[in-house]
Structures are given as C-alpha cells and as structure tokens.
Amino acid sequence: MSNKLQQLKLQAESCIACKLATTRNRVVFGEGNPDARVMFIGEGPGRREDELGRPFVGRSGELLTRIIENGMKLSRESVYIANIVKCRPTVDMAMQKDRAPDQEEVAACSHFLQKQIELIQPEVIVTLGGPSTKFILNSKEGITRLRGQWHSYREIPVMPTFHPSYILRNGGDKSPLKKDVWHDIQLVMKKLDEPGPG
Ligand code: URA
Image (tube, rainbow, N blue to C red):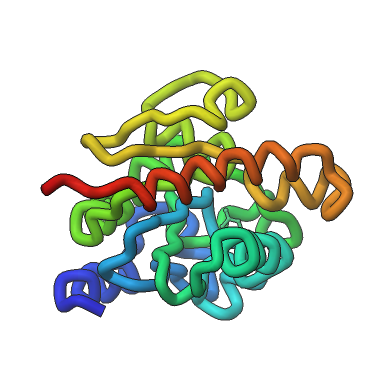
C-alpha cells in the first residue's frame, strides 16, 4: 500500500467521529491495488466485513468478486474496493441487521473515501447501488435512472450499477437485473480498452 494510503488507513482505524465507532468490531478501510484502474464503491460494511475488516467478503462480496473475475477477467487484487463509510451501520444495538449509512455518518466519514479516490486516481469508478451513487454524483436521482450511463466525479468517469445485494434479493443468478449489470460492466471494460490521454 502506498505510504499515504497506509497513513490514511491508520487514521481511519482510530476514528471516533460518529456513533458507528461504538458498535464496530473492525474498521473496514478498503483494499486493493493502490494503482488500480478501476475502483468499486459500496455503501458500508456488513456483518462479515465487520468481523474480518475487509470490504465485500460476505454474500454480496462473493457476487462482486465473480463479476470482477469471471465477468471482467480481472483479479480482485488488481482493482480497489471501498465503501462510503468504514464502519458497519446496523439498525440496532443487537447488531442483527445492516442498513444504509445515515447522513451524519456519511458526513463524518466520507472524507476518507474522497482522499482514497484522490490518492488512487482510478481511470473509472463503479458505484454499487443507490447510496454510493447519490453520494459520488451528488444527486437525488434513483439508481434505476442513473445506472448504465457515464457520469463523472472530479473528471473521473463514473458508471453506477445495481448493488450486488440488490441482485441477490431479486432472484440472484436468475435475476433479470443481471443483464443490466452486465451491460454496465461491458461499458466499463470498453472504457478501459480505450487509449488513454497521451
Ligand atoms: N455491502 C457494501 O456496500 N459494502 C460491503 O463492503 C459489503 C456489503
């Protein structure tokens, strides 16, 4: 990991800027190649991620890994995977269910993600689901309207697509939404094939 990313990770690991610090087991900073061409952004760690301190390692992580490895023919290590918030948002202190981060949590945490993007400078960002798409694009539009088209974040092309957990909740491998995700991912692969500046 680059020195600056490593420093940022240490900073995140001792963060107590929001209430999620009181219920987390592990800070899930994000992982992958500091020189990644593609960066995937989800909303926040779930139960498994909170246990292991790694992003997208639960059921939706398995699907994301399949998309990266089987669909895009990239290794998971060659991309970068992060979330808007670094600690698990749960609905209750019993920590049974996951939820999307609230505004206060996003406001307290998102500077870490912004700095990660600045340090990694990916060629393409893929936002997974509504919350990360709305945050990155500063938009109130729903994911169904935004996905499948190019947008941008500080001049970096952004492709929003459905969150893997949404696919899993809507039929999994048989989900009709899979073809939409495949469409979006193909656009990303095409963009990565285009000759870069210079
Ligand atoms: N869902 C997310 O948005 N991020 C994770 O890391 C895991 C599940």
